[in-house]
Each structure stands twice: as structure tokens, then as C-alpha cells.
Length: 194
Image (cartoon, rainbow, N blue to C red; front, side, top):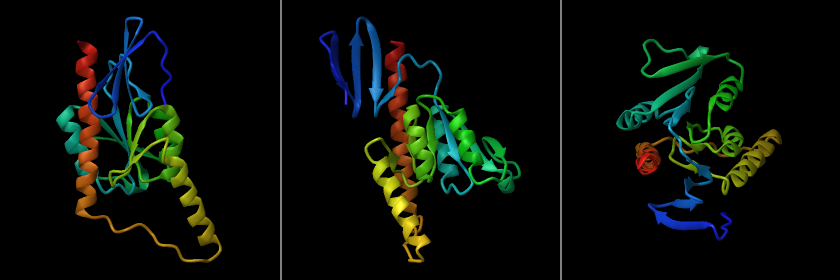
């Protein structure tokens, strides 16, 4: 939600972007992520231990010349991996803590961990699941509650469904969503520099 005063002029750009001129200063916002005068490109941070879309991430990042940082446990160390890899301790939350401490406003994080997503959203970070679902301030509380209810049932010994099998359609959906986010960012960089 945006509160607008008399000093603002608004014009709609592309899908969710709003250009706001405030006393001569140009700001661009999307999904509560402000891209005001960002000179640095975003970095894509990947919770990589069980990420099924590593190749798709690298493909999309190459198209827009965006850096990718894969974060994984040293137990999952790869020989000759492509991209930048950071290996952390095997502790349960080590990769999550590294990502939380290294992201900056406007970065993109790929994770299936809803708890990590909930931690990152207040930092104005785009968070995307490997299935192409964007975690937002509007849907994160419902997703966290569903996760809590499922965990509660499992502790009571009741069987709950796991996630659906990952499909080719999930990869396509993810790739399209990531390309859209990167395309929107690239468009904003052009408009900011003009």
C-alpha cells in the first residue's frame, strides 16, 4: 500500500512498476522493493543444497549479466561447479544464515524454505521458489501457517502429504518468472540512467 501526498506525480509502467517523482527525485518501486538509484545489479543467491533449477538460474543470469552465488553445505561440495559457490558448515541453518547476512535490498533469493523466505522479505529482497512461486508479504503468513500446521500434525503421528514431484512444467514456470523479474529490473536500470 502506498500513501500519496500532493507532492507526488504517478505514472504506471509495465506490470507492477510505479514511477514516482517526489520533489525532482525519481523512485521506482515494485512489490515493496524500492530500486531507488541502484547502481549495483542485484545478485541471485541460491539455497543450493537441494535446488533442482541450478542450470536454469545460470542460463537466466547469463542473459542479464547478473552474478549468482550458490550457497551449500560442504557435504554437497561439487567438482568444477559453474558460478560462484560458497560452502558453509553442515549445520541445519548454516546456509540460511549465510544468505540472510549477505543479501542486500533488491537482491533475488531462490529457496524452497518458507522460513528463510519469511526472514528475507522484510529486507526488501525478491524471494522465489524453485517452482516459480514468488513469496510476498501478502502470501508469506498463510504459507508459514500451513507449514506450522503440517509440522504439528506430523508431531502427532499423523501422515501429511509431501510436495508434488518436481516436473518439467515447474522448471518452465520458474524460468519464466525469473526472466520476468530480471527483465523488469533491466528495464528499470535503463529508465533510472536516463
